Image 1 (spheres, helix red, strand yellow):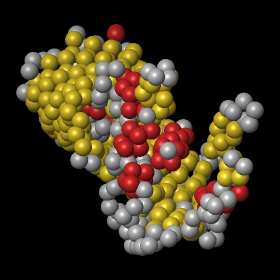
Image 2: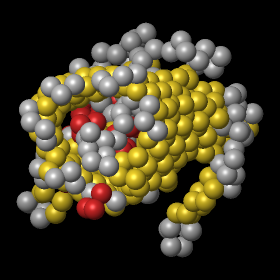
Image 3: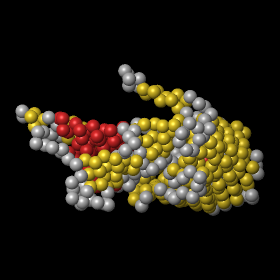
Image 4: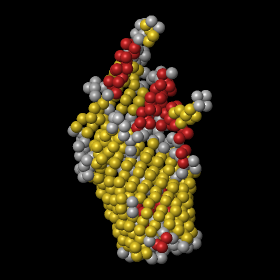
Length: 475
């Protein structure tokens, strides 16, 4: 019974955390195989859109979701009670396996490109939100085994530094592509970053130690999180509606990243490579705060309660149990303090390697490898020397069909890996329409892990509009 209550409580905390808006670039991988959509340049700055001298990218949206959980993993139907309930065991067993829920959104505010023959200039602005959440393996150990067998120096870790992260930032980018000859193009882009909100778990930990004779248990909490925000978030206590607005449009949280790319194309084939978001990321220095334990002594030792008088007159006397409850509540209390030290956070660095064979003039097929290195929090004063905390990759078979220079269809089938775990079949489809070669409408749906989208564990969506001027026939 106690174990079930603990599982439900942990699930409630997890689901509450999902309400926060963080992870990787939201760019659709299948768009890398397009030749008609100018936003393919965001995945490789050496890509030149193939049928326009000038383009204007209107507001569009990207959404990327990666989760070890699907709807059927979280909820199940209880036929005996005729209702849907949260599957606490499944949620905790999955999230404590080392995988994380990762969500990224990006809104393209505006984009501009100019083809000058030998050169190709690009400019873009975006707003981005990243979120990630996971649970330590020690939580599953504690819920499944309790503290039996874990005594002395064998402590159980109930919280680690990779629990949660959230970030909101803006990005302005300027890119330059260069045609070295008829076959080879190279490109580079510099991205100027400005941070609006960050929640970074610097070194928080919660451990449970048991005395060798099982006479007592000691919980030690080291709560240490970085927090900075130029966004005010308020909640109406009556209607329970949360609102947010930017109170400082130019906070002193600046950063820079770089993109590099190359592409070689002949009538028979094309090969390309790029590295995206190479650099230190964002330096958070404006109004830094720390989230720490409210107790100076963030340790609590529990030696048991006297149960001789627990029942009084056939009812439970809460006097004794309330002591334990109050102690645990006091241990969990936190406070936000000023004067935090400036720090860096890095965007995941992406690597793309692609190759396509031109079967006919309008039909091509090939492969794309996409890898992401998620470095997490960068140590203060040690910007480039930080170990990777996660690696994610996607290998995709791509097929592209262009019809009459205004319809393009791209299809893919991808194999995904997440820190050594494989997902073997994830189809994708993309459609780009450019009637009269002026207005372009596009939609890409990628890495679909389940045809029933409510049960999809991974999903990429990109959609938007582009305008073209000075159009010419495809090269």
